[in-house]
Length: 160
Image (cartoon, rainbow, N blue to C red; front, top):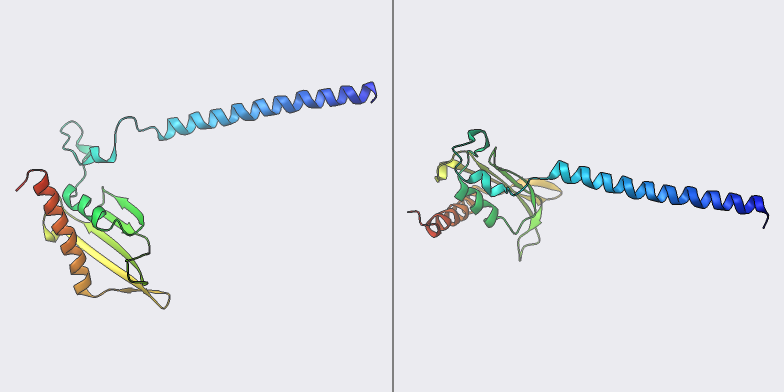
């Protein structure tokens, strides 16, 4: 190998080492930015449901028992979205054990009271590639299951 080629190979090796070091540093900086952007400290989503007299802007206007009961009752379906500020829980299409028909459910909790009037459920099943609303009776069954679970959660916490 000639001296010129050896020199060129050495220079390319140094440049590649510099690029690898730069790429590692860029990855490290990106990870630091992501940690800073998504860092929520010691808080959790459940902190939003606890009464906070210090910051009224952070309170949630839905009943925490209904919220937890709806998530628990619909846990067999994949969760698509859940927003405790608007009170909306939406599942993605999923199947109920023993039934090959895919179902999807949307729950709306409209009030902080543990009351049937605070809860709205809309369930759909797939039929021929379309979403078809289930019967009113099936919607009521889902609402009843959520309300029953909410009452159980309240009793377990020591409420009446």
